[in-house]
Image (cartoon, rainbow, N blue to C red; front, side, top):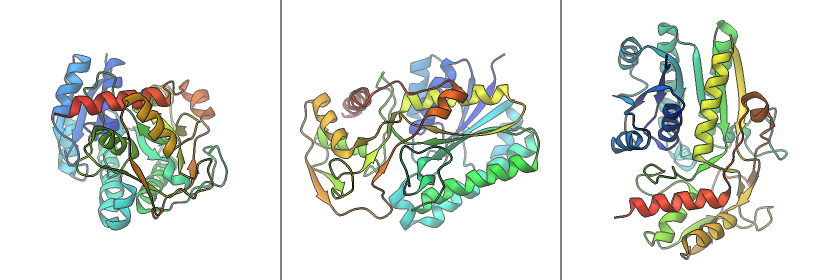
Length: 336
């Protein structure tokens, strides 16, 4: 019998791609989303891709009554938690919004799970919990520290999960530390569609290539990296989605566990590497200007992915060219 999985934030960028991967792996998905940064059209597109309409509840994870109703109406056996605010820059300007959504929201969700006796939880964490890396590649044992409120919310929730795990038996928790998700579903039916000015590099580059924005601002070219621009571990969103399916499968095999793994490719690319690859794929010019460094940014960051391979039997398979091709196809499909 197919297991029911609640995916919070399931209409968002990573949540929607993971919903597709879950449905294709035979799970039944109920999406809970307040649609603050996503739209209902995404759910129809998930149905187009998979042939299955996911269940949907429009609600906020801070709404206890809504959560109780979801757990009563559907026999949920696991929760994958994506719902939260995710812009590093914005978190430095609106820290209380971030703590309310990301920390308080997670606490409310976990309380509702506790009441419903659901103890399988996959958490969308982030490589930002490593702060400014002391060594590369970054293993899961790397000391944690943060350079912005967004990263701090992820670190706090990680600690909350560890506390629950120690306090109560039977919890099966995976804390997945993502590096930089990019790309889109190869069908070009779903992808990253930020409202307003994109906070992430790839959609911004795509919009410049499309002529919707005049220039890309690159924050700093004086970092200690091969070309002076920031280096990141970009991972295709479908590889990331498969990582969640693997983590869920792993958790289902355990009586109890607290697993913490990096999800990345293990390879770092600079901002200029990304720009050049995107130009090659799109055959379009991406004009850019170098501006001052951004507060809270670090020079370089990429993952050691050994543990994910050992524990989950998972590794990323898509390269930077595929990431750019899929993002460009999505940008073309989105543009009227």
